Length: 479
Picture 1 (spheres, one colour):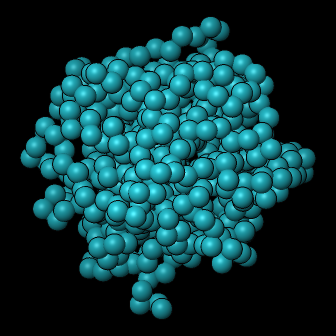
Picture 2 (tube, helix red, strand yellow):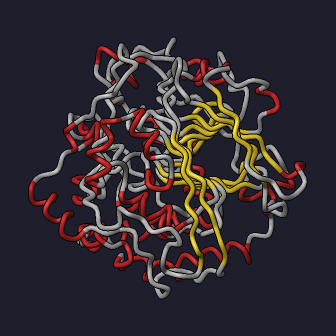
Picture 3 (spheres, one colour):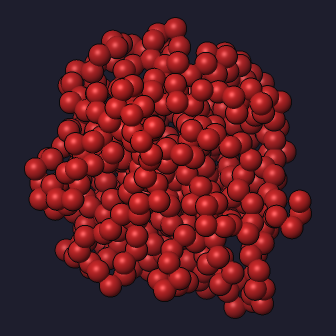
């Protein structure tokens, strides 16, 4: 099929320890098309979707979707939610900037949005068949990040909160920052700033010539992801958002503070992620940009003078790592549609054959480290609200090495992680339960006209099991 590109990574060991994985860019609710586009889907182990999933359960959910009214439609997901259809392959996704935001808020820490379809959460990490898959949802926005509001957006969303609800927050950046450095796959919706320098830039600009100015200004993508991809160094990093296929390869020398390949954008001006693509359903050519994320003169001057987020954190702030050569393969894909490169199939080597998820294939397992991080960070936020909101977010954005909470919370997280390792010997305790329930009305049953929250059993069970504070879902009428 024309829309599918096969890409096989080099495998040194036996082919028995590999997984066949499909990666999809932006979903936009087109689940039927995506599943039908995968040849021999029964042989596939896993499908990963890089955002704009649109898990709309009923017509009321459209009120939480940041899409112009004339383009709003239910698409396919509601049939999977109601049980009319079932995903033919395990599907894992993160959120983007066109989502059913209220449903994803109800699953802050992740969970099943439908049978066989798993949301990683605002931040989350799971194991499947020996692979660790981590991701964080949303896109970068300068104003929201700098404002550093700690409370979740409330229903009904207004013209501001329907956008800020999917903007990446400092708390989730902190969680990603403190993840382990041997992850297999990381998912993000928007690209890391500067990633274009590691791939075929000439081809990218031929396909998307209007990217040129943003690239020159260091605005194409997220400065947070720029830091994370060089710091975390996963084997694979998959993204969507910009509606174009792009591949890159970063080779780092682990153990030093300098990149093996210099980054020409190290001193560029990174202002904000302006790439909130408007969904012009009648136009298959260039997507226009949403300018509501533009920054003012003060912020432009700040970034021009100060921003440099490519430097490595100092060793006293981060765990020591062995000296070795390590490469990260980056892949971004298009949105689902005709004549678009929205799907790619990879054969990925499994390195950890001793993990319970490999021994017990077919089941998801929580990352213990992600549990420890959620527990420690969320308790800190509850107990130290003012201290957190008073953090100098401009300084952190300028240089994540100077994020003071990393030093403060990392030892606590390590102790929490070691405690779980020591005290909980039954590995199946960390198995993700298959506890999906239809909580909100299905599309056929829905008679409501007002969008409301439906507290989710999965979130409550996760919080109670691991001692994590429950998220506070508020509607403005509750105040």
